[in-house]
Amino acid sequence: MLSACVPNDPDEDVKIATIAREIDRYFSLLQLQSAYDSNEFADSLFRISDAIRGKTVDAYRTAFDAQLTAMIAARRNVEGAEPLSYAAFKQTGINLNTRFKRYFFARVDEFLAENMNLNPKHPIADLVTKTGAKTGFHVEHILSSNKENKALFDGDEERFDQERNRLGGILLLKGRDNISSNNEPYPDKLKSYANTLYWNESLRADSYKSKLDMTALKARYGLELEAIDQFGPDQLEARHKLLFKLVGIIWS
Image 1: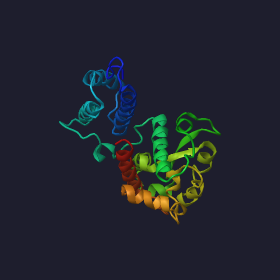
Image 2: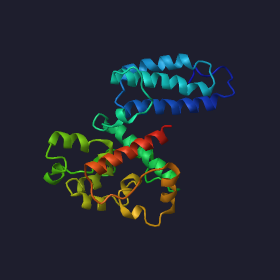
Image 3: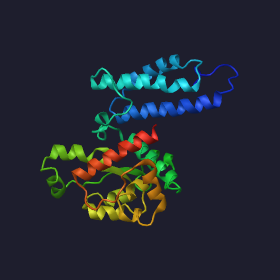
Image 4: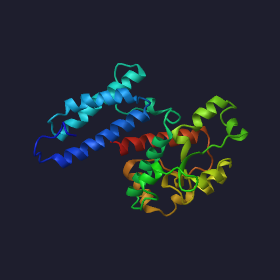
């Protein structure tokens, strides 16, 4: 931020705000595409700092994307990469630390609230930092670990574990709700998702009945949001692809 500004810079405020958003986007897209390395990330900020020194805000995205695509390409061992691709996002979930998962779903819920003209269910800071048994938020697996759900994945426990940890197979619940729904079959879990976060509630049919703001949201962004009565591999993949589309919108 300091490198981008000059003494008595009339654009200081907009530069600082823009760079803050770019750093958040840069960090988040690296995490979501399994390309984040703390040492390389720190080094890359020096290169970005040099590239934006004294420049106007319209130069920032190019500087950040140059480092973003270079790091993704290096991680995937390819010559070139896009800032966001489904191939790099497809298995995202188990690789992420819990704190970032909480931040990710907090941003998704913030987006849904803003676009449906609703108040956020919880402040982002609470969703990310609170971890206590009563008031903290924890990662919930939509698919409980039982024989019935494993059979949906041909009894392959390794595949089942990998798939249910993808972002499309998890969500956030408050402590007590998470504990109570831990081993329930999916139809019972749906009941636990009522009056929780908007992303959780989007699995339920009552989120769509006579909800004009939900209809408008879907039309505005072309989102395939829909109630899901039964949850298996196809539904998990659909939710994961939906999150990929939301990533492209939120971190555009």
